[in-house]
Length: 151
Image 1 (cartoon, rainbow, N blue to C red):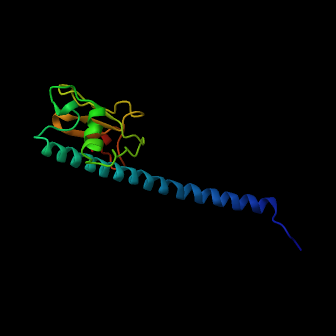
Image 2 (cartoon, one colour; image 1 turned 180 degrees about the vertical axis):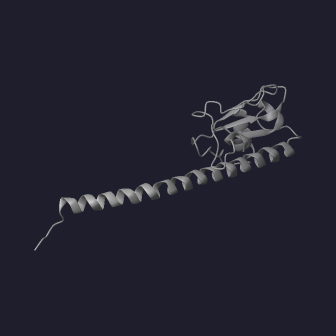
């Protein structure tokens, strides 16, 4: 009477588990990717609504300009201060779900919008106050082939 598994039986079971894991793992990874894409779109919606709401309440001047003066060079600290700390339009700036940062590259009025991600390890968003445009700062395309910068 046997009381243990043979090495061959154990190897077969481990092989079967490996095959099942190889089939199932990509399915979970695609769900993770889609969840991040959905979170990014929702965070952009939140930011865009807050920017628009701020501008409506400040005579059309969007957040980002120090002292609310469009003659000043726009900065990220002013953007954050105006949306989060001064008027509490947001309790905190939402993060880019791909790089977990809320920092934004703030573009000057005459500066063109970049055609690809800018320092994606540091900036979560790219914001241009002159046009009230904020975009996701992440390279590549999503699961449907849309560039993240085009969200």
